[in-house]
Image (tube, rainbow, N blue to C red; front, side):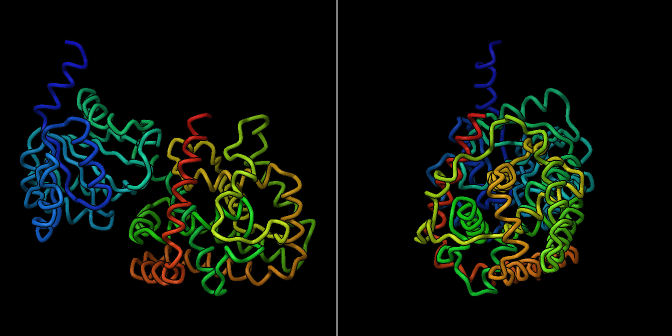
Length: 439
């Protein structure tokens, strides 16, 4: 039977289920329904039943009262709930899973998700989970989508691939441990670096788009991506950092790298500082040669500014956040380019501006000179070191409530610019996505 005919028959008969209708759950439901899957069953908490029915009344998507109804009826079930709640939700609805169904999750940390599935799901169901490496407002086409076949047959895996094919994403097959190890770097540490910058600017009572120190191509990436994170929901980032077993060591090393470099800076230990920076740069970027750079020209990145500081008034910046990230990768003996299988737009930007700094000798020398001898930016760098340590300690303690308070307090400071930043951030992500497809 030709594939397209078989696929069409599946779309008419197979029941798809989604438990959890947050932003990503809704994205999945709408994508699957629009692709032609006729039986898409969804639910959220019982108290949201009526509002969801109203929202999806003309969509062809069936809203059910709770996860028991979805689990008993569906052949493929996706749990789309925050990682911190996955065990409780699977414990509640997992025992109702239809015999022979395929179960997966959309959490960004897979260790607790797999543990919940193994503990609470019947043995006669399959576990094939996934993770779209982008947020709900980013087009899925061309973005990485990880599929993890934890307990599934080749036939069931092929079915999951057909179900998810409508996202037009780049499929990567990993184990859940590989996924968590890579995303600890591509997401948890990247987010911490941006959040540390946001907290620094808040403590300095500084809106960076009006500051000549934070003007220019690299700075536009820092500012816009920080605003993008802070305008989103705190629990997404907290779960990535606190619940990922691999994240704490990497976050700790980033904080240590920031502190080590800052101590060399304030002591003006030029030779030791330069040696450490050059060693890290050689480790991460030494084999790049004539490889296509991740980002485009500084002139292109200049277009994405939230402020209006003239370019001729730009002041030096130590780029401590970037120097420390490259040092962190070096200290951990990690090659960030090997993580591109799980890249997110934010990680691609972060690696891109790090690459941009280190592969431009003039920029790197200016950053080193500013780091060692420009006292005007020393105050910001001190605050950044303190902010990075604060985020690291919060993550190390596993303090979800502390993370929420810290995140929301920082976000509150910038909230009036989130609307404009969202527009510019979307344009930047569309740019980097186009660039990715060309590589």
